[in-house]
Image 1 (cartoon, rainbow, N blue to C red):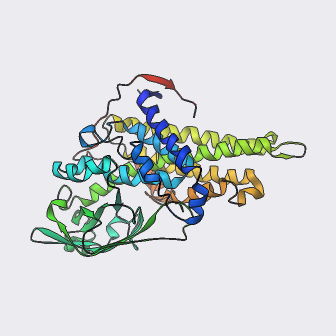
Image 2: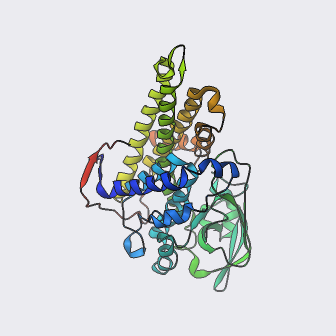
Image 3: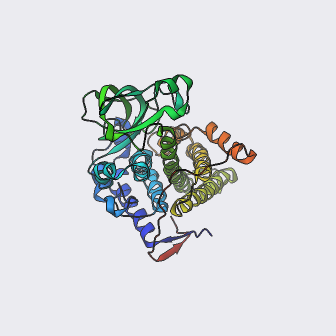
Length: 411
């Protein structure tokens, strides 16, 4: 059965992330959001706190924590700002957790270990200028020539594009299958920033997540050693979908933090702001908005923890993770809109954080599968049109033997 108690280890990870949020992110987030820059102190602080690989096994440089801990850390970081949670999403969710499962031993030693220790930063490159949800619409190619592949193409909307040292890159290795849009012609590679032909640039003017680095990657005749092919030729699509499963899970956990941040800001403000001789928190329609935030937080968090519980057991959680991501992102958008409404005219100003919450909330309903994609996914499961087949492999089960210390902990 599902146990909603948290362990000492899980709460320790939550508290590590909360400490980084309180010390490093919250005091400066308004400044870096306006500058549209990543806080240069953030990644070193996350490394020092062991947040960049804590759910990777100790043999590969991590702390061996469980996957529920990952959701709790994402919640705490996004409570401060979405840009901080995005780092865990791409570095751990999309890169490290997948390489743990699909990489060979040499790749894990060379790339996973420094990533888990925070010595190297990683990200994920699937989306292209003309391909997002339509993964087989990508145009990047990797042609085998002797002991290497020649990679050409461009990736767009890549988190940490100007920061990451290693990139998980997806490209067509079978050009005939590319013409037929047969996804069995896609392959996955690990690409290093310092290789000839690799360039990147930042995207400015984003609606939200302005304190995060987002950009593009370009590959021009990049020689990728054959040993950097992940798993085997033709496995790229299933690896990408596996990566996205883990990424969606981190987005769900983070969205819970955004909902909670909206709720807390609205509660504090409405208890102080007075109209018609009483705090606006006394007005029933304001209470309705806050009650909806509370409900949205509770069931979004429950769905996320259910997905994490399945991951801890080593079971596939594609359906449950999709549901958690869809619902938590939807509720985050609603909570942010209602928080702005609670603040009235002041919610329209960056003097208060709810304006930033509102802008940040929109992105998660687009990336890692748009809300429309997740709606169709859930309908297909309910109608029986979609049935998950066993994967070649899945996340290794994780057992947290630390004592259970808190049930439904106050956050």
